[in-house]
Image (tube, rainbow, N blue to C red; front, side, top):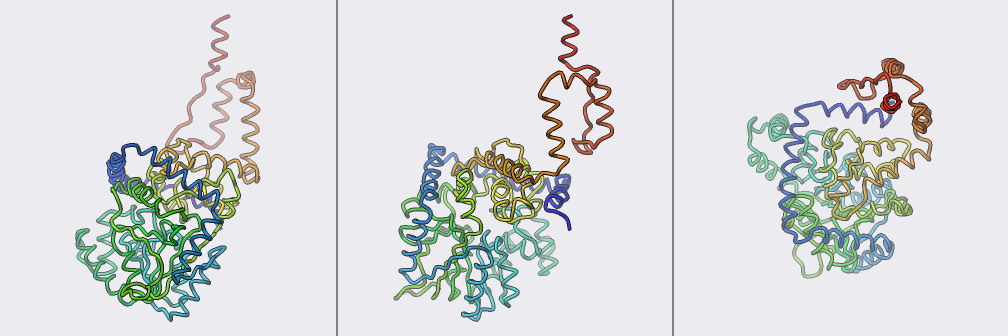
Length: 456
């Protein structure tokens, strides 16, 4: 069975697919242009980022207290809060809701944590049809694929790819426009919304002082997923909590400006519980599943705790030169790009995923664009340090690094071997620069040796 590192190396060959790169370049450029304009709406965006970072740091220093405050306040209005240590416990909780509601159909708004716990697969096994209602998620579900990007699940597909897919699956016109395809999906989903027994959403923020679930979306599908079904399940990580409703005017515009370039997302909802007495619309039952999934492990690591401040804006992916070339599927995990490379080894084990920490040029762009100032490139270096401490590097790497250290510790050792010998050694080994580049040729004598000879 291939290791995760081998899978990464195999899938990274997509970087040489010109059509893939053209699609990604175009789609990311649209976001880049929008975000550039979005940032200009701020008088001082760095100050906003500093404030957001401070608030999230305060949460990280008092996370248990804020979670208990959130639980107390949302339970007081009739919601049920279930705690899950891992994906299995979360699925067990959700399965009980399926059984109690005799569900056959659930509609989902976009949620990365539902991908993390593989909700769709377990729902199907339980006899409950899961339907993605975000257009991008609907596209990748139709293609039997996973989300490609944290914010834009179908970023790897062009409008022609989507038209071809829908023609094959739904017999829509082969050259249908994006508007026509959107209209078709809207018609399909309206029937699903009105017949589903369960609606599933994630949470962008958990507001502690009011016990509210803040939900941010652009299509209205999140509200539809909450409004029609009798049962609403919120699946969220414990790190999503913020202290107060007064913090939303800071975080909501920052998330939209950095994530999509919008002044504010189209739909911003604060869900405070199930339908109350005297209310006409809304679910009769609301269950909030708070999932740990290694957050506690990261929380204990003072050097890495900052990564839990992430608000899932996707900015670090868009800025990362590695992600832009190898794409989302190469990482073979739910969270990709710099943020995924930091947290995945904690979630799924350093033994299998420590290689992701090396999928980084240490350019620092991810840290620069992060709206809550997570030092991502530094954390990736710390992950590499952990991999070394755990002795996860291949033996040839360990030996090679020791040889490298020995050779470069003293100039005399480098000068002891002439260029002809070095070139011969290179010809015997692998081309470390890859098949598309040639190793440079060493001069017969090093620069320092030539300099010494010249000055004699």
